[in-house]
Amino acid sequence: MAWIGRRARVLLSVVLVLMAVPAGPAVVAHADEVLPPVAFTTTSNAPLRDGGTYGIGTVIVAHFDAPVGDRALAEQALQVDTSPPVAGAWHWVDDRTMHWRPPQYYAPGTVVTVTPGPGAPVSFTIGASHVSIADDATKQVTVFDGGKLVRTMPTSMGRGGTEKVGNTTLSFWTQPGVYTVLDKSNPVVMDSSTYGLPINSHLGYKETIPYAVRISTDGVYLHELDATVWAQGNTDTSHGCLNLNRDNAIWFYNFSVPGDVVEVRNTGGKPLQLWQNGDWSVSWDQWA
Image (cartoon, rainbow, N blue to C red; front, side, top):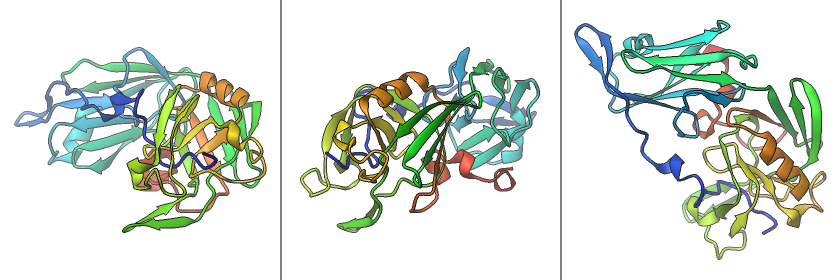
């Protein structure tokens, strides 16, 4: 129980992540070419809500129903407008998926509208500037609201190292990089067997965890774990999650919205990858 955290899967509250994304209308890109139907989501795979409010690190994801041949036409057809004006660019993940973000975090109050050619536009508003910095050098998470420090939370991160299970090598680091809040659940069932670590192994687990805020697609959370309060602020004990005490976990759960920024610094292991929700860990030169 003391090491709960790495790549846990939500079994109860985020069925949306595993469901197929509903397709929108076909997109007319050119007089003689029609792109496949497209749907817009966040990086959690949840549909982008028209009229919703999201954090300053929100990334727009466009899912096409079929492979796209002419990427330049697709980028032109899917128009992103912002008020006030913000520069930005699409980045292709594969031949059916592209992500859009600006070079820096949005300013609070920015209104973003994405239009799929002839389809109905989706608009959302950027909320308050929430940035949390988890520093493994201090074992603290400092939380800023509009640039002002509002809370400091002791944490216990990934214990580090690797272990080989069968033909798979599992890492127990909290990877460094810039994450965003994907979603949150209270509670969430964390099951190590979902990423290849049997429950009955010496590091395995299956537990119900309260006040869990998910920041990576492979199951890194900031969550309550009173069993590691003794370690929070001084010792890393988890499989990769960031453990918090109950008061801090409840506070952070209520504070967080999808798109909020969480920066993890000074940890070991490989840098966060784009597929893990590391869009902001990609430099702008590589993105655009």
